[in-house]
Amino acid sequence: GQQLNQSPQSMFIQEGEDVSMNCTSSSIFNTWLWYKQDPGEGPVLLIALYKAGELTSNGRLTAQFGITRKDSFLNISASIPSDVGIYFCAGQQGGSQGNLIFGKGTKLSVKP
Amino acid sequence: KAGVTQTPRYLIKTRGQQVTLSCSPISGHRSVSWYQQTPGQGLQFLFEYFSETQRNKGNFPGRFSGRQFSNSRSEMNVSTLELGDSALYLCASSLTRRGETQYFGPGTRLLVL
Image 1 (cartoon, rainbow over the protein chains, first blue to last red):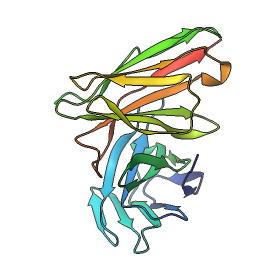
Image 2: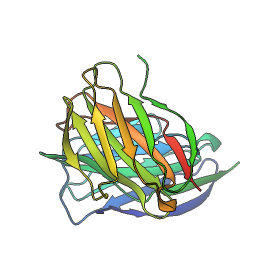
Image 3: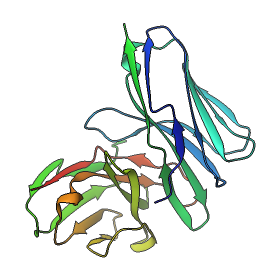
C-alpha cells in the first residue's frame, strides 16, 4: 500500500540533545499527524496538524505542516530518556479517503 | 473519558482457523478504523466503519472482514488464517470521518502457528 517516506529510520542520541525527523510524500495531504508508539502498545497521538504552514507545539515537541502539503517535520528539544520509542508520521487525504497512511517510523534511542 | 479498548490483547491461533477481534471506541466516537501492523509492512489500513457501514477499504484479501454495531463497537474477522496474518491489529476511533483525529487502542497481538 501507499506509504510516506519517513527519515531517519533510527537515531541514537545523548540525553539533552535536540531531535528532528521528517516525512515526505508525492501526494498532498489535508492532515498530518505525529504518533509515538511504545513496545506492545498502540500509537499515542502527539500532535495533529490541519493547515498548510501550521506550526504547533506540545511541550518539548514542535511539528510543522509543510507549505506544499506534501511534508511534515517533528522536532523534540532537550530529549530525555522517556522520549525513547518509535515515532510515526501519518497523513490523511480527506474526502472519501479518511484512512491514515503511515510512515515506517523513526526509532529513537536516548543515552542518559 | 475511557480510551479505545480492544479485546483480547493477545491471541494464538493455528493456520486455517478463524478469529474475531473486538474494538470499543471512545464514547461518542462514531468512526472506527482497523489497521494491521507488521515489522515488514508497517502500519497498513484495513477498513473503516461509520454508522454501521463500511466506508473505506484497504488492499487486503476478502478473508479480512468487519462490522460495526449500532453502539459503534466494531469487530473484525479473519478467516482461514495464514502464518503471514501474525501481526498487531490496531483499532482507531474518531468523532466523525472527515478529517477528525484518530485515537488508537492498545491493539490485539495475533500469533498464527
